[in-house]
Amino acid sequence: DAGVIQSPRHEVTEMGQEVTLRCKPISGHDYLFWYRQTMMRGLELLIYFNNNVPIDDSGMPEDRFSAKMPNASFSTLKIQPSEPRDSAVYFCASSSDRGRGGGGELFFGEGSRLTVL
Amino acid sequence: AQSVTQPDIHITVSEGASLELRCNYSYGATPYLFWYVQSPGQGLQLLLKYFSGDTLVQGIKGFEAEFKRSQSSFNLRKPSVHWSDAAEYFCAVGAGNTPLVFGKGTRLSVIA
Image 1 (cartoon, rainbow over the protein chains, first blue to last red):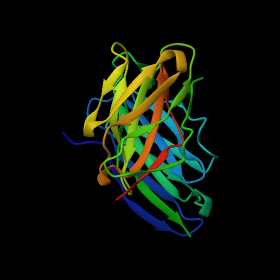
Image 2: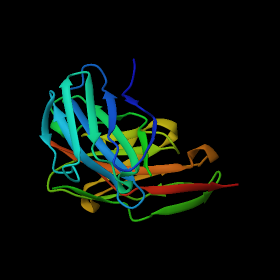
Image 3: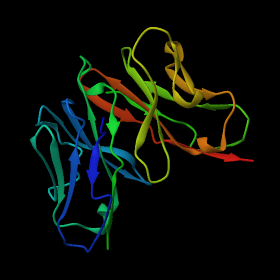
Image 4: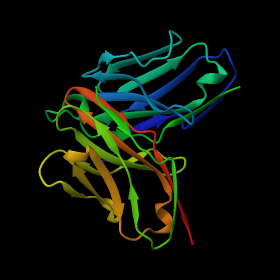
């Protein structure tokens, strides 16, 4: 069974450019999470969805960040315009409810490493 | 809201020695508890989890963890560390309808 699939694995771009990160969750999972990992701040939850609906986006750093989930099998995280401080590894994770809401086991993708020059 | 503390940023152990990584959480009720491992350049992989029942939980790769409610702890242990265990380890706590909260991680180095 395929796990969470993220693309691209690596992205190098210049400041001011638009960046789009993509995620395909595990089939049947109804929760999807976007995390950002940096040395300084560790793993930060940016936003999460339940049944394709954004539930909490309070972790999104600023208006330059946006996320969508148009269907159960696809989500995007967009940064426009990008800045050097956005350089990080961005992880997508998915989960199934099983009565535990958003607090159940997460399955992570391998991450997208973003470098903004 | 729940929180997680991993007091040790970096631990170095000798190959074959025992290992204990500490994790303390803060939450008013019984939480869901997890340990994840992250190898360089990889995503996080679940080692083990606790939802309810037996407080000693067995995981993959020979790891185990014990939930101690009185100490609000969920420490990870392994009796004999292998060089391949060198990685970053994250403790996480979940609670009902709120997403997992992760600790800052403990980096494990293994020396010969």
